[in-house]
Image 1 (cartoon, rainbow, N blue to C red):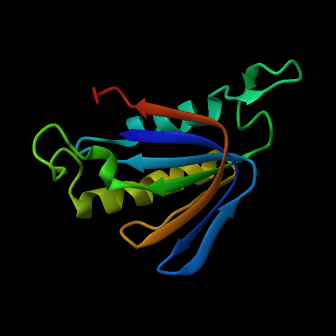
Image 2 (cartoon, one colour; image 1 turned 120 degrees about the vertical axis):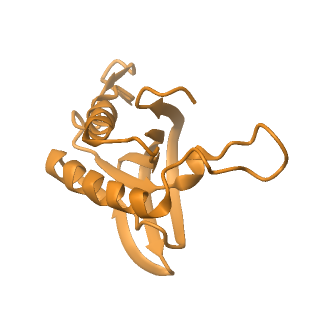
Length: 148
C-alpha cells in the first residue's frame, strides 16, 4: 500500500461533479493498493498517518499528530500511485491491485479508517476533483513495507 500525505488547512472533493466530502485542518491522503495488501497493511497505514507528528506545537516544532490537534483526514483512492514511469512515456499500472480487488480493498480500508476516527473519503473509480489548501507545504510518501 502506498500513500502521499499532504498537510492541509482544508480540502474538499467532488465526485462526478457533485460535492461529496470535505475536511478542515488535517491531512489529505492519496492511497493506492498493491495486489497483496491485507488488513495488516491497511491498519499500518491508518496508524502511521494518524500518528505522524507533522503539526506544530507551541514552540513551532512539528511535534503534534492530526489526532493531537483534533484534525481530520480525507482518504482519496488513487491507483496512479502504482504507476511505473521507468520506461517509455506512458506509465504502466501493472504493479497495482486489479480494479475489482482494489475496490474491495478500499471498502475494507474505509471501514477500518472510520473506526479509527474523524475522516472523510473519496469515491473509488470515479472522476474526482479535489481542492485543497496545502499547509507548509508538508508532503510525505509512505509505503507499507514494499519498496517504491
